[in-house]
Amino acid sequence: MEEGVEFKLLNNPVEILGDENGFVRAVKCVKMELGESDASGRRSPVEIPNSEFLVECDSVIMSIGTSPNPLIKSTTEGLEINRRGGIVVEESTGQTSLEGVFAGGDAVTGAATVILAMGAGKSAAKAIDEYLNDK
Image (tube, rainbow, N blue to C red):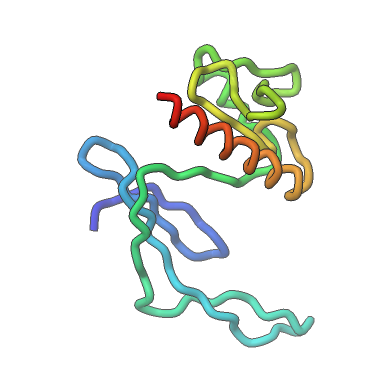
C-alpha cells in the first residue's frame, strides 16, 4: 500500500492515500468496537485487529479543530480573511473569495457548535452541487 498522510483519530491511525500525481485516491480506515467499561462506566472504542479497509474517493473534506488555521492567511493567495483569522464567505452558500472554493464551520466562525457547522456544511454542499452542475 502506498504511503499516505497519517492522521490520528481516537488514537488509531487513519491514512489518506494519494495517487502518483499526489491526488487523493482513498482513505484507509480501521473498524472499531466498544471496549470494556472504565471506572466511570464509559466504554471507549477499540481497534478490531486486521480490519483495515479502503474507501475510494477523489476528495476529502477535513472537519477538525476549533479555530481557523493561522497558516491559511499566509498560504492561500486571494483568500479573504477577517480580523479574527476566519475565512470570509457568502453566508448562504459558503463561497469564499476564490472561485470554486467553499468553507464553513470553525474555519469561518471560529469555535462554535456542531449544529452550526453542520448547517454550514449542508448549505455549502448545495452550493457546491449547483456550482459544479453549472460548469
